[in-house]
Length: 372
Ligand code: SF4
Image (cartoon, rainbow, N blue to C red; front, side, top):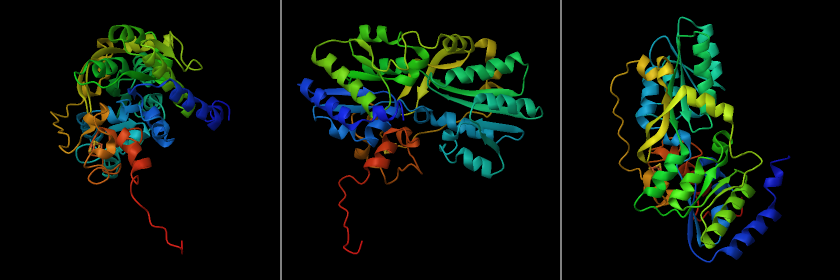
């Protein structure tokens, strides 16, 4: 299949591995920012096939994972209210809050629905004028345009029983926070191609210049990831720090200007808590004053919600590359995808969940009997 098979070609992969080996002379730590890339790396064993001088650090690029526990508890509280239809993409339905998930709220009688677009939630609000319809608007810059469009349309069409619970996060401030951290180990970054398809690459040049760190915009197929790694390693070995676009079939410098204009009208930048990391200044979007009437947090008073994280969880250390997921004592024991304790086990794109899916049997000897 075009654009899939051609980016999975084993012969080309071998050549890229050989190219990387040829240019690598020192130890380098490279962070892939996006959870989709983490999944591609672990699923295809890219980290295990790379030479041992290159370490891949799995960054905070899974939007479901970095949504704070308190935000999920707020969603659960709103979804439990009578006369509320709570809409979400399917990936949030099983994400546990402090003591239950949206699926459980539905089994207890809450009206929780999976939608495929926030515009479906606007339509539901139109069809159910006696209900309050709330959409859980989470994610990186990639999902923001559709969420902004839903609020924009609701306002234009005078739909007053629609609102959004917003927990949007932004990639560039997260990269900046990681580079700025006193004990940062990251030498170079693979930036998330889908985020850049919306926002372009223009935001990353100043980061490269300010921090003198290579950033290569990278796609998600195995060869995309390898090409991104190859380019970062070449820059590091040559002592360069530049912004490169290794995903030009999707990403341009300016990005989707119409989407950026809409997002800038509906949202404004704010400080945001990242699960597993903490608060990062100016790293999120919330509704701009002209659209604040659609803010579910203001519309529904669910009281103060205190959601402490598990003391066992070391996802902050995983996200900064200090430990690998299977070095956490709770990995696969107290913490599994069905009962996640922390950010990085919550969704399949999280580093701990990827290790659980593909690596949890590493080091365990399996006996195979002759009788099969
Ligand atoms: S395995 Fe679970 S408890 Fe350990 S760091 Fe990952 S998410 Fe946290």
